[in-house]
Length: 302
View: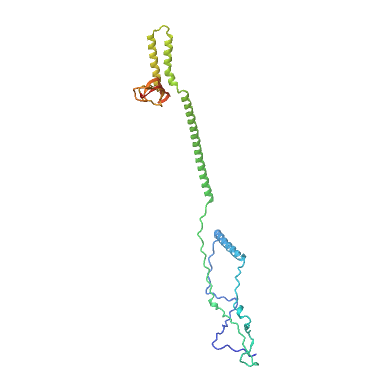
């Protein structure tokens, strides 16, 4: 074999810089950060953030790998039309002997071994370390006095309970007053319906006394009897008037079916539907018919 040939002129040569292991050059020594005060809230939030990050990493690690679709290799793909052609020549190995096409069969040419390219080591001056920046602490949360808050809540609860008791007592009193008023109203209605004829009964008593007196006289003339009956009739009319009991005598008026009851129809010179005769008078109590008048109604002559 021939000796190794030197590299052609102008070719870049690898850097021969030797860096001791573990050598790190820093630009300047970082100042010692101030001692932080332990904050339980900040530590709890940091622990939650780390736990969430760990859960994400675990989920990512446990996910099944994604299989990329198979792609055809250009170097290994054989076109159907080119089947049977000569296979591609294998690449020469490092240090292998290759026979030139125009060389004599006995002569061979040996290629020099290809040296692997070694990237130059990075300069140690490029490695810089910056001082750790102090973390900004969140504003401290105000402390809550639980004892004072509990005492205030107890005071408010006692006041609300007192007001509730007052409202309940007032409601009970109003309910009792309403029930009493309802009971008194029912009693008054019952008494009114029971003694509604009290006034009318008191007005009828003189009429009864007059009739008894007239009957007590054994020897009396017709004139005296008539005078007594007229006086009794006046007393009765006064009693009816005090009870708002009015008489309905529709002679000569138009027939009103709401107040009159037609017993018969007769021809007359009066206008049709006119009351020409009253057989029995009617009576109204406060404008309400308690007995209709029985009348005869006229009709036109044929």
